[in-house]
Image 1: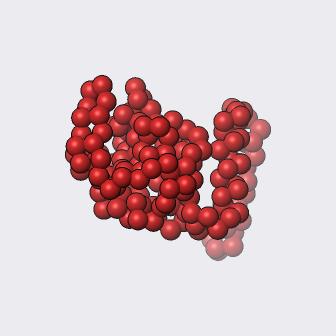
Image 2: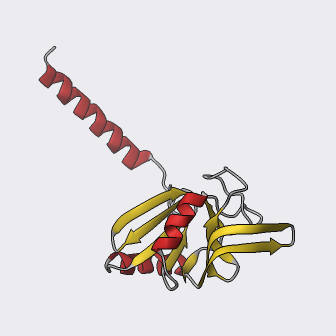
Length: 169
């Protein structure tokens, strides 16, 4: 058999498979709600600017620092667990603290490094007390390794936009 015949046969098989899937496969239509549309619009605005901004993708457990449409830094995070989820939406860094104490109903953590609050009690900060990055384990904050938190803290300023969303994996 020559290679041209094999390529044509493979192309035919692939085409038949795609046609079969298109005609007989099922699909679920996903409808975007107002919150999703607001987040998507904000991302589009930021990517068309030269502004620094932070994207937190809860589905992928990733944080990406952007300058306009150029990613400049990416890191694995830990976000809120199902019982204490990280809220989605569009925010901005409100305050920055080199070191702070974080307390809640069932936690009291001293010396939390490189904390940047962006939504009330929600913050991006370093976590020295666990190494479970890539898993949702927090009370709603976005945890990153301390060295990554330091980089983000030095890069971002008060007012830097923060977009928190769930992507389609």
